[in-house]
Length: 455
Image (tube, rainbow, N blue to C red; front, side, top):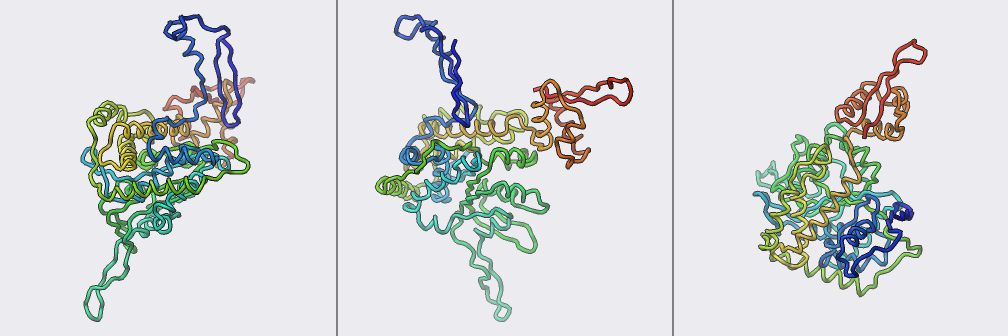
């Protein structure tokens, strides 16, 4: 068996090829030939790949038209388009799962290299379509600055009424915002995660609740009690893989914040030294097709499933709702709801009031990619940044292990002994490390405490 590694820069492709051609009957149905074919398939690294089914319909046409002319990641472009379309559509079409209403609202977290991930490029390539299809939305409904929960609600606040002290008549103190659609385009999500750690900051709570599309969302602060009726909030956020591993803490993974996001690993699709330009005619076609789909949704309210889609849903539902171990379960535990919202979007792009099997298949392909991205990003993360740093160090040390003093030095002596004890205890309880006490070589002094990674 010949093994060849091909270096593609950010990833390595490993190919397995037989030394001699297989014997068979020429029809491809012999056992020996089948076994050779399995061995000969191309195996790549763990970087997630979006399945072909996801490129269905208008969303797929958008990506396939633009992709030859851009370095942007195709999966990132597709998801940018779906999130944007869902926000433009607004809060009228919906579907129901287990009594809960689901609207075309998605949160997307693009994770990749800072310079070469082309995360921002994916938005820049998709946005011109909406300049044609929904120019007012582009001008008025895209924002940034997820700094506080109050700030989020202020952007979609209800009118505030009061009483005129002289006449006793009711007057408008604040006209509020009529259009409750808003897409937060957050290019520095790392800073948002930092703000979430500040005492009293409600941004995490508001983001979590807004995904549920409540009929009424409000803050409880006495100084600024803000209300927003029927909020329609979408998010596209950018971050590096290293930053999200460090800053998305155990609480956010466990309390339902993390699992409201779709995760997408994004990297440059190709090298185009001189860029590329999509023809005006092609962009006009995509823009007008998107406008037609948006217009069709005005006549759609409750979206149901066809019999074929319902049959497939019944077969995949158990997998989508299965309990998963460790913290990765807290990150991808909304697979059923996320898939349903994705299928709703594919149906709406087809101008349909029913989710058909092909829409659900496309949604499942996106969800599989999001799940694979989450697993690639977090792996077997504990959710504790100190514990994860120690574990990476010990895995790098291999069989030699590391002493407690070496661990303290590795952390830069900026982490308290108590905090290190908690982290080591967490790793011990999870079975990821083991500890040995070694007697000093001279026989004098205290035993050395040595730590080793077990996985």
